[in-house]
Structure formats: C-alpha cells, structure tokens
Length: 215
Image (cartoon, rainbow, N blue to C red; front, side, top):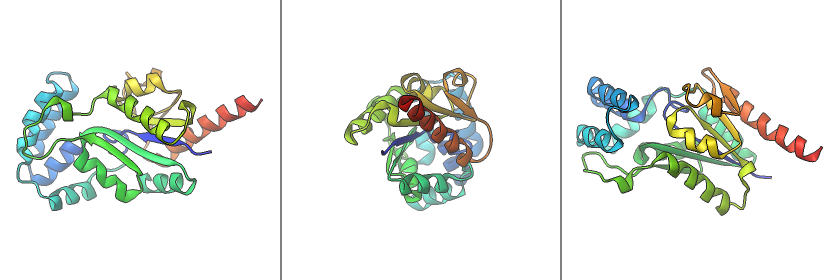
C-alpha cells in the first residue's frame, strides 16, 4: 500500500521561514524579519506581506536563491526521511505558503511534488497566486485522488496556523515543534531537532490504524 506524506515547510522542515532565509542571504535580514513578525502577529495581511517583501528581492538571481536554500537552517534528517518514503514507494508532497521558487528546490532532496505561492521576486502579486491554508487541504485531497488513495492513506506534518485546516480535515497528523493553536488538533506532537523522529511517529499512527482495522 502506498501513502501520501504531506509536509509544511516553514517551521516544520525549516527552522524559520524561506522569506527570512533569502533576505538573510541578500543582506536585508532585519527588514524581512520585521515583516515576517508582523505577518505572524496578524498585523498585516498576506497581500501586505508580499507587497512589502517582493520588492526587497527584486535583484535576487537563481544563484542567490540556490545559495539561500543551501545555507538555510533545515531541521535534521529531511533528506533521509524523503529517501525512506521514496524507497517504500510512497509519495512526498511539500505544500507551503512560501514562494514556490524556494519550495521546489526540495525536489532535489527527494520531494515528489511541491506547491507554494506563485510569487516572483520584484513582481507585483495578486491574491490568485497566493497559496492559502485551504489550498493545503484541496491540494492534498487532489493528490490522493490522483494516486487512487483514501484519506486514511495521508499523513500530514505541520507546525502553525497555516496547517489548522489540514489537521482538522485529516486523521493522521503530526505536530512538529508546533504552536499552541495546532497542538490540540494534532494526533501526536514532536518537539525536537530531528525530522526522522517526527516521521517515526507518523508511521506509528498509520500502523496503529491498520492494526485496529484488522482486529
């Protein structure tokens, strides 16, 4: 039996945010960090966030993005977890509100499908290119249908408010260093620095579910 493993990126795979990591590489960390904190606090909208952030990256090259991705503060074990999922014939999907031009680089680490906001450095954006929390649910459900899987074949990993809808919809959910709003919604929670341990909890969830169905 195959399965779909859905990962958030910022705060789950990445100890921080892609927008801040790229800005750090470009030498504008303080500005980006302020914008990120304002967004997390609900002081600005998603559109305000991008209207402020995208002009800061106007001169970012593909090499800059590659360098920022490589230097980012990833949680331990990401590539190993993706490799194990692949070896089992299962599917890795990363669904994030961060820019897809950053998220898609995880395909080089073994992610099969990646999704993110279709924003571009220095280009004014509109709401229709922004990925929302509800999109996470919609994309996950579409992938399950595409691969002929049921909703019990999905394991979701996340950390914050952007994962609330996903965790409310699916049964097998793992909170990874999650914020308080997500903890009561997670089937299990993991606090630590190694994705392999969180992934182990996810595998245990589906194994327990399979055993209960058999018995």
